[in-house]
Image (tube, rainbow, N blue to C red; front, side):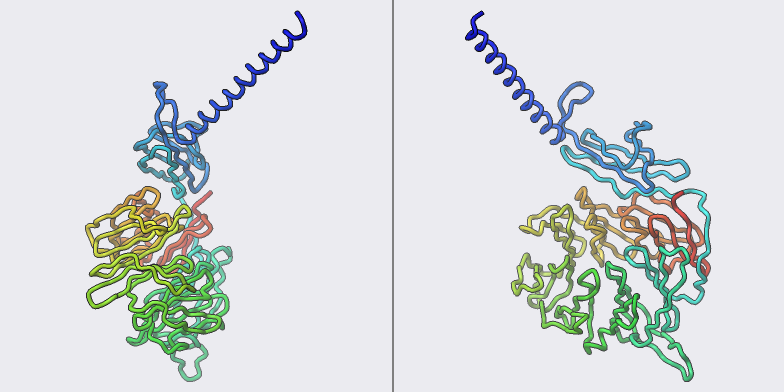
Amino acid sequence: MDSEKLKRRQSFRVIISEFFMVMAVIITVIILAFLVSGYWLNSDLKVERQGMIQVSSIPTGADLDIDGESSWLQRTNTSKILASGEHTVIISKEGYDTWTKTVNISEGLLYRLHYPRLFLQDRAVEKTLDTKSVAFATVSPDRDKLLLIGDTSEWQVVNLKDDTLEPKKLNVSEYLPSVSLAEGATIGLFSGKILTADWDRDGHHVLFKIDNAGTTEWVLIDVENAKNSLNLSKEFGANFSTVKILDNSASNLLAIQNGNLHKIDIPGKLLSAVLIDNVNDFDHYEDEIIFSAADDAKSYILGLFKIGDSKIVELATSSEPFKVAISKFYDEMYLATLQGNQVKLYKKVDFAPVADFSLSFAPKIIEVGHNGEFITMYTDTQIATLDMETTGIREWKAEGSTFGWLDNDMIYSVAGGELIVYDFDGFNRRVIAKNVSDHFPVAISDNKWLYYFSDGNLLREKLIR
């Protein structure tokens, strides 16, 4: 065979080989694109579009059962491809209780179950502090600090991450509106009534709304150093109806005085000029404010305002006021409004409607939950939870007279001395402790310890082996 024929034959082989390699790459890319989009072969070898579920739990590594199927390889803190539609998820672990939920998987989408918590059974109870003199208590958002308040101006701060739980004294007599000092006494008597207590995200400050013989005053207490505390009402000589913390460290606040919204600079002790007038409700995310304000006697506007910008964006008008909330979820901003029993959800970027719901009751309060993953609306213990993961809403009722947040995703209530816990949407109701005081907070700290009050004592139980 001459050399020219040999070269042509080799070139042909190279071309054919490269052709098949290119086609293999193209087919692989197409298959991967379909897999990423959720397409899969079912047991009948038919192509169907599927979704994915991502399951985490506390404690980690629990047994995962989906639709009755489980294996020693199937554990929490993992992801699994599922056909679209309803699936029953059961999470269990030896020595712990069981968690279950029916979820709806959508085609081509990821469903996250990151909040399931299992409670250790047969837990030992430890008495930590005598709290018979405590009249009020509040827990920081990170559940690291507990502030104990009695009938004197010497309060106590307990670091829940410190195993000694040794209280630190905090003398706040100089900043409280209702403290009397008897002759020869070293500690003032606190006779005011605490109406609300809101912490900053850093867990260093608590904003108190206090009733002093019928007069309302606002006090910002620095729990790290009481000398940096400030009585806002006294400092600015203002009768604020609403005050909210603007940033993580409570360096800036937002306050309504005579219907007008102002910004308060705490380090500079400055009250800004009016930002928005005739405001009846507002919420904020960082420096963006959504608000409801009276336009005239018969009209209300829903608007957006960014601090530092003089422009107000009017979104909607109505004959009745709005209750409002602003939330960030999956890097996208959302606005929620509540009017009577009507709930509406919008995308902030273009105010495009996402969903609207009619509730069986008219909530008094609307607030955004942890990381914007849900929005809670409630009146007393009647609750409606808007789950941003599914854009669905569920009404339910907590037992007892009040409810609170056990951690970022769980709600608790106390009824008949029983401590009852629920997921944020009311599912997975469980009784986890008895003989619990119903007018003090309950908290889980460091994902390891359950703290609650009982018969004048602060008790704790270890939740994880």
